[in-house]
Amino acid sequence: MSDVVLITGATSGFGRAAARRFAKAGWSLILAGRREARLQELKEELSQVPVHTVALDVRDAEAVKQAIAELPDEFRPIKSLINNAGLALAPKPSQDVDLADWHTMIDTNITGLVNVTHAVLPSLIKVGKGASIVNLGSVAGQWPYPGGHVYGATKAFVQQFTYNLRCDLLGTGVRVTDIAPGMAETEFTLVRTGGDQAASDKLYSGTTPLEPEDIAELIYYTASLPAHININRLEVMPTRQAWSPFAIDRD
Ligand code: NDP
Ligand code: 8X3
Image 1 (cartoon, rainbow, N blue to C red):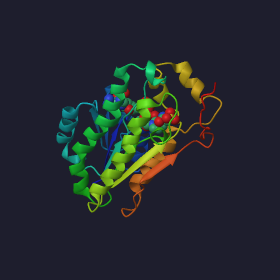
Image 2: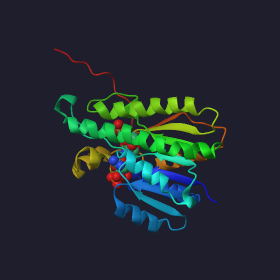
Image 3: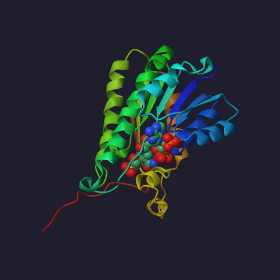
Image 4: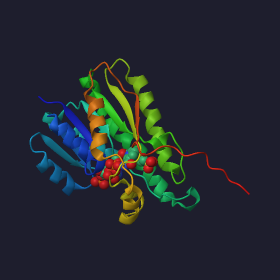
């Protein structure tokens, strides 16, 4: 029987590229996301491996629990969980942001991620040696920038939750990793700007952002390393991205 991976946010960006990468290696796929049509398209494309799709909002703890409880036998136990579903909203100063946007980021990037983790942990522990959780954090969880507000804070949570999980899972064989990418061209900026394609194109133009396949390769690499190796955190930026000096308010 082949190894099973559950990928959240498989309808776009890193998640979809990761689905293709794990399929290439022969893994069985559980693919989750809200856009059912895209899940079906991907299932048809990746018909060389067993694929189970789950149209799911990770913010709904009961739905997550039920989806895991109802997995066909062929798709359990789960060897790798890729906690990838997430989003940023409202790229403007905190004082101009709608509270609902902050709540959406917290509900998705924090509550959604812990919902899925809690539901899948028993399965991962059953596999034990070689099992893994790969959480998608961000450089924004470590480095502040204007307009990062709650998004960066949710990714700081992802980093610390990763480390704390590692402490509790010591001895079970389950590995936990925070992969923290910098700028990558996906639908991320389209979502962040509320559907502004021109703003998204402008951000990525004239430079060389990371591609979804770059991160998918790192996710796959992390999950397929020999069982005795745990990457704690992997921060990765495009070569053409770096930090800026401190900002100073002057008279
Ligand atoms: P995309 O917008 O391309 O993909 C995001 C995925 O998350 C989609 O598949 C979407 O599926 C899913 N998703 C969002 N909300 C929910 C929800 N409530 N329930 C279930 N699924 C949800 O962005 P990326 O691929 O770039 O982002 C993937 C992860 O990587 C995110 O956690 C993001 O924060 C992180 N990241 C992105 C970076 C970048 O520059 N692109 C850099 C660093 C980290 P659907 O809409 O169908 O539900
Ligand atoms: C997404 C990357 O640089 O927009 O997490 O924060 S960045």
